[in-house]
Length: 569
Ligand SMILES: C[S@@+](CC[C@H](N)C(=O)[O-])C[C@H]1O[C@@H](n2cnc3c(N)ncnc32)[C@H](O)[C@@H]1O
Image: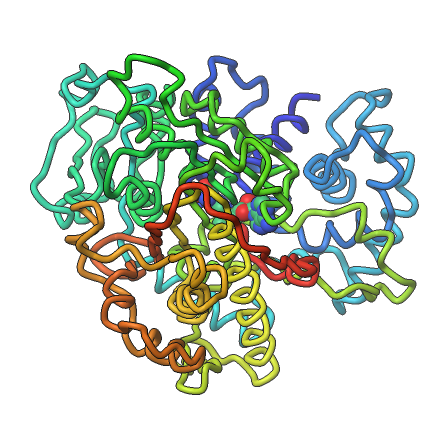
């Protein structure tokens, strides 16, 4: 039944994405980069997906407790969500013939599913399904109300639609093309931000060419990308300005030589960006074999599928994807890893810099494992994975490397603050481990480390901890200084926090560190400003050592402990 297959595919693309909205996906006639038209009615898809999103926490609990995924192998988490939604909440039940394989897969278990739904309703303290519906439409605690009001406030900050000209697909004279000639260039980002609701239908889209990142355009907030045929063809890629910094920073210095690895790649915006830069640098290469290859590693199998899809849309099918691969488990002495010369490391982080997370659709999806680890009381035997909530975090570091909650943003009780502090510390440990592991590749001479977090502990804290590591010291790793960086980033005024560097340097007992140099080398983007960026952090590292020196042993420890902590945007 195309309605359910198509909804499930759309949920997969949308889940947690900052670059795609449901509307723009639906009201384009075909998937971006594909000519295949959708079979289902967009309005019907819209209604089902938004309802499933609203109910996803509760329905996920029901699906997991009923053990549906363990028993019905043909159901994916996304399919289970939309089918169980219709079974329980649509007036006419599942919209498929009685003998349809998907309908049967769910209806076989309907007694158990309905019983779990009733139990969930009772646990929520609702006397009827109507009351439950009302509860889902309204925040039911003071904290939720506070969070909602912050999200509403955040939405008032204009955030442009950033579009990167994808040089893998776009012609060199792209801006001279037919579609573009109808657009209207303006001289400042401010003009773009104030022209929300510009008449896309007439083709007179206002745009501004960014002064820091090559090939980047800012369009008015809320521009409907489905109106732009270059976007549908993959010539333009929706990518926030801040998220363009890492690949661009990696291109500092001489042309990239030797292979490149994107270590935490999905959904793949940075991967396709670096692939485009490599392509640009080698447009006139005489032999194919001298062109650096790009590798993309992604641990999560579903996200790796999205990665492949996005690379296809971007015309970057030549990128070698290693799906279900843990970066920390690569054998750095074996091919192809022993020939890697540069690494983009953009690991899971708290995601606290993400603007407008309220508009990002994040689904809580059922998993097979959760069903088997839930005991009779519904309490998980394992440590519970943090939900990716639509909650902007509101934390800054205090002087004792702890966490200070900004009271004016949201009232967080002591318990939550402790959980957050623990979570950030664990994230920082894992991020440092990944960065030092990147330092250990025998031929790597350049690394970028980035997060979409505003917390010092995940940013300057990790930079300093990695520089203090044995592997960094013995192999000669240092920060890529500001004056070594590509011009656009050198000019960018927001640099690392000196106090945070100083604190971390003291904590690690580094005696020979130049605090100013480290802070100046770090790059920050601030959320909620008229610069239209997410909160973001990036730092580059280089080493001038011999090409083939012996790699250090880096202990990876057991990372499973931390797997549950990250925000994987
Ligand atoms: C912040 S996202 C990366 C976003 C991506 N760089 C982009 O710009 O589109 C982090 C990604 O790293 C993956 N990841 C986390 N730990 C990993 C590991 N140890 N090995 C490989 N991938 C990992 C997560 O599954 C997630 O997809």
